[in-house]
Length: 255
Ligand code: SAH
Image (cartoon, rainbow, N blue to C red; front, side):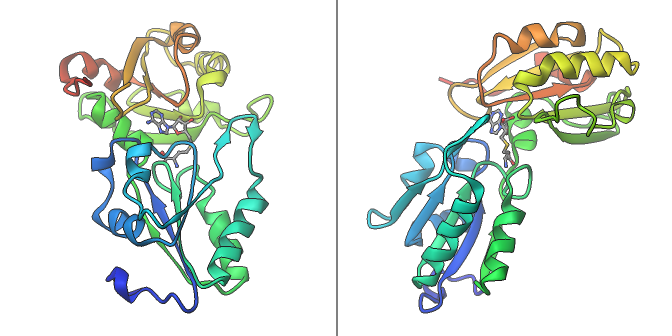
């Protein structure tokens, strides 16, 4: 795939799977901006901000396929079909997703449906929420005094959480970042404590991170579920002593 937008092959159709980052449009990559500006069609999710959509050409067709937890407005097979249909019309399609398309974004599944139809594509990575929101909250994911590893986990758990290896998560010197975890905080809290993580372990919930509405709630693991009751989606749950550094390192002051 040549880098110049003007050399995109319109004759055959092409899909750019683009990560939009966590919110602040200035966190888009240069490549993402180029692709959004020149796309014929933009197929976008709920988490993509209006400021980012405003970068599109006035002639671009904007297709909203937003999803909310528990009710998928547009089923995944239908989204896959929209991408295929638009590309087969010879269009340059930008599939725009919040954060990074390969982190809990089903980007891989969408690409597989393109491969099945021999449609050419590229992937433009984005700043995933775990990286962008913690940066804007002044929470380093690793720190020599706090955590030597970090793990990204989906909070969209199966009913009894049997799909998660809780004993391996319940460790000090480790940072846990749960996506889509707000509703599951009671189970997250209970499973971590049962498996030996101290109830005093510091936690943070970052609501609408890297946006002017950002809020950071902090408290011990024993109060995680209670904190979650005060937060709205989208929120990221961070568990680990690095979250203590928020008090010292918070720098982003939304207007
Ligand atoms: N592909 C995305 C994640 C999609 S899953 C990425 O890489 O970031 C959606 C979840 O991401 C939300 O439930 C929330 O946990 C998290 N998230 C995305 N943007 C966020 C934001 N601005 N603030 C807080 N959490 C966010």
